[in-house]
Image (cartoon, rainbow, N blue to C red; front, side, top):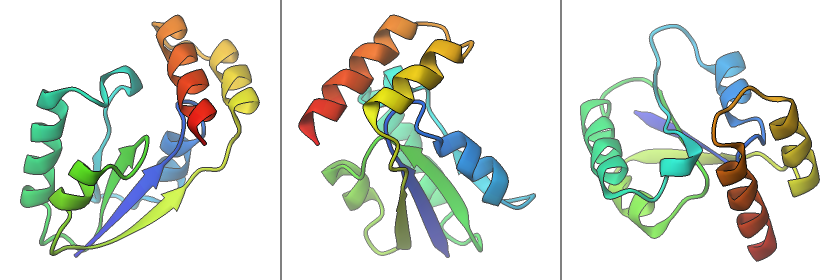
Amino acid sequence: MAFVVVTGLPCSGKSTFIAHHARGGEAVFKVDGTDNGAAAVVAHRGNFIKNHAKDAKAWIEASSVTPILRSQLRGCFWCEVPMRSDARTCLMRLAKSDRPNKEAYRRIILSKAGRD
């Protein structure tokens, strides 16, 4: 089993990358970017990992590989594919998108970009 963890800022291209590379039948775990820290999301992701641990490949979309995600993946083969879009590019994509809560996404992009 292999998990591919695609990471990056909101609007960095994670969903697009997965859409182009995941094959039919491969499971994808994706959460709205404004919910990444919620306890329910962490629990749901843990169940996803347990349920798909025997699949040939499964995909996880995340803002980063957090210590919690790393511990959830313990014992599994996994790799990270980071999307390297900068904050300016992500903000331009956000402006052109039809996402709700654009202000929340803008704050996430600016706060996470400031830490890198």
